[in-house]
Length: 205
Image (cartoon, rainbow, N blue to C red; front, side):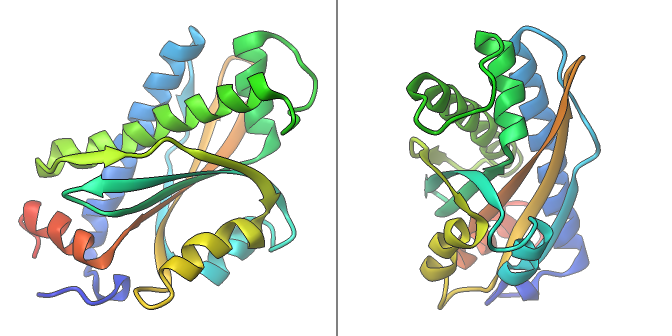
């Protein structure tokens, strides 16, 4: 069956995407643990296909302030992967990496660099999960960073995909170390033909 939209995904295909999300989240927890040199655990991620308006509401509304990391996907698959992190997540990571710096500040060059490196590691965890399951060659761009309101951050993929799909794969993760816990949100947005290629490679199309 040819996919024309995310809404065309059947339950078996959605289960495959959920499995990719589960593997990616597990890989991300392992990678963060190695980076921070302390155990990092992850709750069972919640993985759904949602429209942008629902995602905005789940993130606290269009005026909620968050950190956004955007990476583009190229190679055999094309699209975007976006991480939306609450400041508590950045604070947790940075306190482990560089000690207690108080609250994360976007003007802190070292802090932004560390958060982008975390974004790189986490994105690679999800992309490697897709690549290992599908056998496809996938490349990632360096992340671009912003701290803004959710509505402004989500306007980037909304505009880019306006004529393609109004739905995205939304992964809610909660990481915790021995002291703190914090949520991160992953928006995995392959283009529809890339989604078709993924399903074909998995034997589900």
